[in-house]
Image 1 (cartoon, one colour):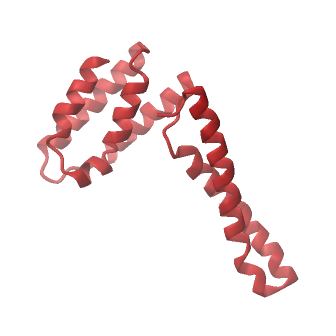
Image 2 (cartoon, rainbow, N blue to C red):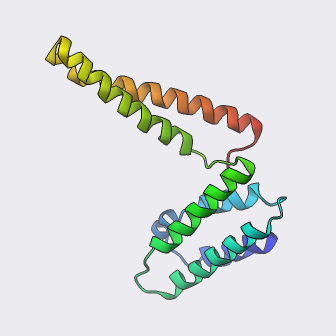
Length: 147
């Protein structure tokens, strides 16, 4: 795992700050730190392909990030299934989206009572989703499963 961190440091210096954010290099660095003690052949193969894609992006003037982002999402999914590790902010986003859906349903129910209440459901849903997502993330952080 040490070589991946070194590769990332070498490659990262070649990218602009804006591209580093698009490539999610900070998340990748956190993931590499989290899985440093775990040895897994399938994960190493996926990381090799990811770093090959990073090298290709480095060679291009106007890179296409679609395949890279698919590969990094595949790695994140694999790590979540194998060890239960989750990227920081993922659960908050998922629960906020669920809260928005529930809030919209609430808003339609409020409209039947009074049409002026249509705007109250969405903020309530977002607030509930954010609070549940933060709670779940805090639990996982205590368990050491957030990167």
